[in-house]
Image (cartoon, rainbow, N blue to C red; front, side, top):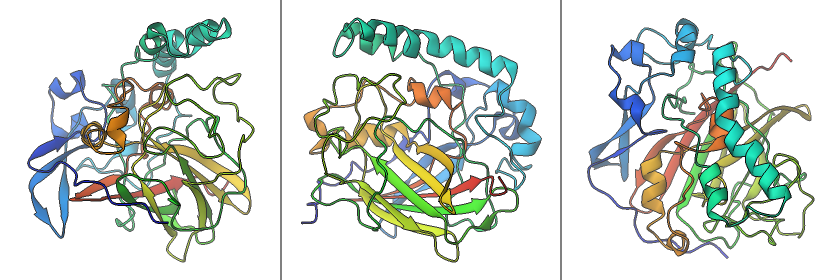
Length: 348
């Protein structure tokens, strides 16, 4: 049974902040010095969608040293972009350790004592990060010949081997329909990689994962450590699937906008494999305004907006703002279109 359509997305002129909001927005400098990433939604409809136009968002200081490699003169990603969460400066790594100390380490200690779960202090610890200095970035799957390296991310505890081969992953899950278009390319030359396997998995509108139907999305999903895989508890596989990239490196998934769960902002997991080898696991993020708007609709509003936002998400901090993992978004009256080019190191 196909999911029923939800009520229309809130419309009208607004800013959909393509990434973490906050103090970075106030910094000066030229557009090139500030980097790119913030998307402002135009106050009009075209072909059923609110179209996003790119405007500058300040770049994190630690990322400016690679600006010539990461972006062209107009601020768009260059073909030889080498941004990755592996390429950290000493300062960035030090900052990340400080940001995560009170989140992951302290919460793990408290959790071992059975203390956190739903507790207020658990929520407080996982909202201590500040991602406002990172510039969200990503290249649409429809922008042929342009790409950037997509940041790797923790796989998380809910990955399951052997997801179904299919385009429509929704099954009976209700939520705002989202068409996810992904192109897999070699980051070195932006050429598509036909035959690559692309798998996705995500939470439903109420923050639950299939295969783990026993999880309470409001309680911390304890595993030791958090990013270690958990054994599947059930045989359900909704909102999971994989496809084989066509001659242009393209795949499409019919899914829904993801809900939130403790301790995460809405996101979608993606894994790319070539010849059966795992080449990258990443997580896709969405404009905070879009997440907030969707949270007002059924069935998302049963739980309300997430206390964990792009600004405070710990996995986003761990990935240094997840460069190359922010899909370009087009909002319709009753649906969302998300498009992203995933750049990988194909020569490994």
